[in-house]
Amino acid sequence: MIKGIAFVAYSVSDVPRAVAFYRDIVGLKQAGLASDYWVEFDAGDTTFGIGRGEGLGIAPGSAFSAAFEVDDLTQARERLVKHGVKVTEIQEGPVCSSCFATDPDGNRFALHQRKV
Image (cartoon, rainbow, N blue to C red; front, side, top):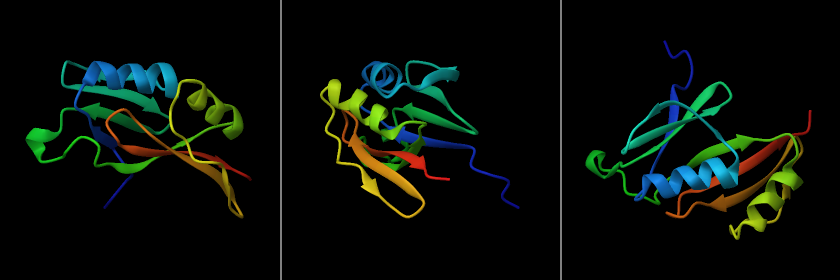
């Protein structure tokens, strides 16, 4: 029986650069394991990990699965834009709003805000 999602992992080519991006620009807090090859961040009830995935057959820049929930989507988007990150315009849906960005390796992720 599946109890939940243990973690979301992205393969990156340069772990220190990716740590700086997700910590300093995206705003995630480092928590859990940290090594030269794998670093974890607190993403609410889920762990978001970055690491050298080539040995597992996961090419850097091939991921697009993480959607980070934020309190203020406009402010979170502006933070990325301020740091030169390419971000789409905010898309409005019936129950949520989101925008999409790309990390330095080309991995895509979303910033997401529920309306309810």
